[in-house]
Image (cartoon, rainbow, N blue to C red):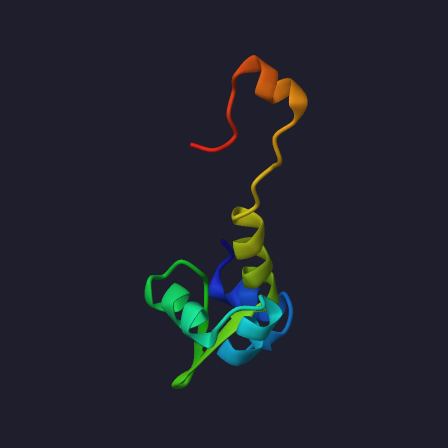
Length: 80
């Protein structure tokens, strides 16, 4: 993940509500990610903001590649 200074210069800072809307999920889920330190965030006074780049990194980290016919035949699995 990027440092806090990089996060501020690498795009807009989103509110928790805007981040939830961007991910089509609930505000509660985003707040849980923050509480568990699973996503990078910035504190601006008492307000919490998430940079667009941090959100994109979190989404990319969760990407799962689809299985192909060749991988299925070899007996390898993409999911643990």
